[in-house]
Figure 1 (tube, rainbow, N blue to C red):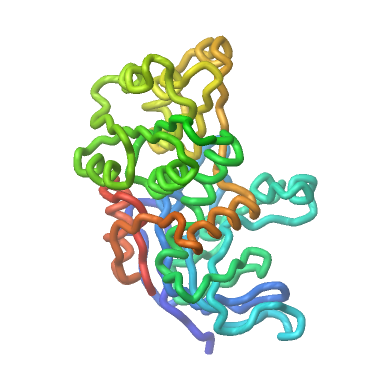
Figure 2 (cartoon, rainbow, N blue to C red; figure 1 turned 180 degrees about the vertical axis):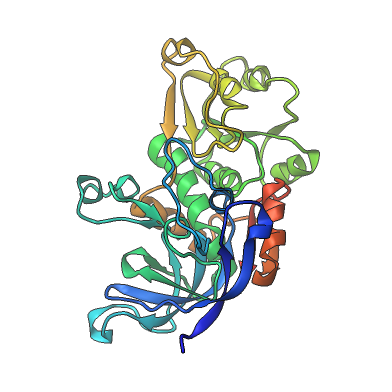
Length: 351
């Protein structure tokens, strides 16, 4: 008889009612893999994309049924190799880099694993961490220090690796720069606040709700524009003495791109990692090239970005914001909170 575990399974596309916590086969690690006993996992908008069957340019087709869960941390439970063939041991505390890469293509050879020609994401193209156990490659593992909780470790990978990629690797943020974060509330936006402040940048932000604005101010955002009834670019320019900001972080997409571009100074950069409101914005091309502005795409960073960002988290220099915790049995409630944009930071579940 096949051994089973409890897992949150998406069996067909639709609403949160299509996610069922049910018995699921316990995965077995193969060569170069380990099985992780999941202690905490964090939600991402990618989980909602899988649930809805989101498709279009830049998106890979997904198979169902599938166990979602891109972010997770736990303990090594079983080895796919003989113990002498791996540096990992059962009981090791680990977190996983979410991207799966070949290691052979020219991008991987250059250290750009998230550009891999066969790139995939755990929890999107293969079963993820919303389960008691998950199998991952040893190439994806990072050790979690004993003094860092599994919840903190699980809440950080996607948010902080993406924010690091946008702000540090791509935009090359420096002390004294001004960053505008559009749509404060997501895990990436709160990670971007933490990283920008650590660099020594000035941080501005926008949000729909005053409650989120209060949290943003507590996190160190200097000025917050609440509401989107009118474009925010004039406010951003006024807040920078008419110059405009150095970097805009925008994961909202079509609804805010025009204002985000117009908020930039000459030579400024729009860093993007999502398109929650749609992926077909209306904007003027001339407003980009005539003012030497740049658009920087960053769906996730590489392994180097991941290690550097997680190193800051492990050292306590930055910390993910955890919005709310749920047991895995209440995964529908957790997903509903994320879908309603009610959270500030990361929603965490535990098997």
